[in-house]
Length: 349
Ligand code: ACO
Image (cartoon, rainbow, N blue to C red; front, side):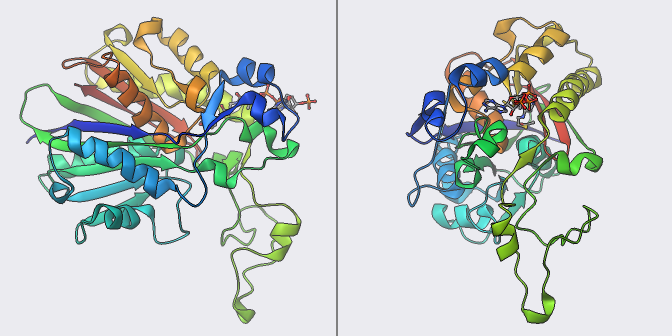
C-alpha cells in the first residue's frame, strides 16, 4: 500500500494589510492589548467584490498544482475546508472546481473550522492510501473579515482573525518511511457553543434551551435570517476566550504526543512543528510544554492573524519557502478549534 505525500504547496493572502492601529479607529482597542494577548501585529483583509474564500483558495491551489508538477486536469478530487464559504450552499469545492475548469471530479466541503485542514489531510491520506485517488487538491481558505463585528462589542474576537488561503496537492509515494506517517482526529461537541457562529442557522434555539429564535416559521415559508436576529445583533461569532485557551493548551500537546508516540518519536525529534495559528501565546505555551527550541516551531500569526482553516497550510508553505522545511524533515501539524475539534499529522517530508 502506498503512503501519501504533500507533492505541492502554495498560499495566497490578500494585499490589504490591516494593522492593530487601523482597528483602533473603529473600536476601543489598542496595539498594546492585541500584541500582548495574541502576538498579532497585523492581518490581511480580502477586497470586497473582488475576492472570496473561493478565489483566494483557487489562487493558492494554482501555485500548489504547479509546484506538484501537474495541471488542473490531473486533479482527481477536491477537498475544501472553510468556515466562511461564499454561499450557504453549495460549498466552495464546486465553485473552485468551476474556477479551475475541471468539471466532473468529486468535490467535498468540510466544516471543521481551525482543525479543517488537518481533518482534510486525514481524509486525503485515506483516499490516496486506498488507491482511490492520485492527485487530491486540499484547500483551506477564509474570508473572516466579511463576518466580524467591528464595533467594540466584538473586539475580543475581531482583532484575532484575518483572511487568506493555503493549498496542497496530495499524491501517493512508494518511498519507504516518507510522506504522511499518521493522522489523529478528535472532537468534543459538549463545547460547541464556546466558539461558534450560531446565526443564521436552522437550530431554532433547540440546543440553547430557549425559544427566543423566531424561526423556523415553516407555515409562512421560513427564513434562516430573521428580522429579530438582525435587531438583536445576534449575527456574529462569539468566543469564550478563556475556555478556548484552557482547552487549547491541553489538547495541542496531547495530540502532538499522540502522533509522536504512534510513530516511536519524541518531541525532540521534530524538525518543525506547524501549529494552527490560534494565538501566539497558545503556541508559546505548547512549545514550552514540549521543550522545543524557537527554530522547531513556525509562527506567523504576527503578520496574518488567525486564518482558521488556512493557517496551517499558509504557515507550512512559508516555512517550506524559507527552506526551514526540507526533504527528510519530520514535520508535525497540529490544530485545535471550534467544536471543539483538534487533530495532528506527522509527516516525513
Ligand atoms: N482590546 C481591548 N480590550 C479588550 C479586547 C480588545 N480587543 N478584547 C477584550 N478586551 C477587554 C475585555 O472587555 C475585558 O475588559 P474588562 O476587564 O473591562 O471587562 C478585558 O479586556 C479582559 O477580557 P478577557 O476576555 O478576560 O481577556 P483575556 O485576558 O481572556 O484575553 C483572549 C482574551 C486574548 C481572547 C484570551 O482569552 C485568549 O487568548 N483566549 C484564547 C482564544 C483564542 O486564542 N482564540 C483564537 C481563535 S480560536 C482558535 O483558533 C482555536
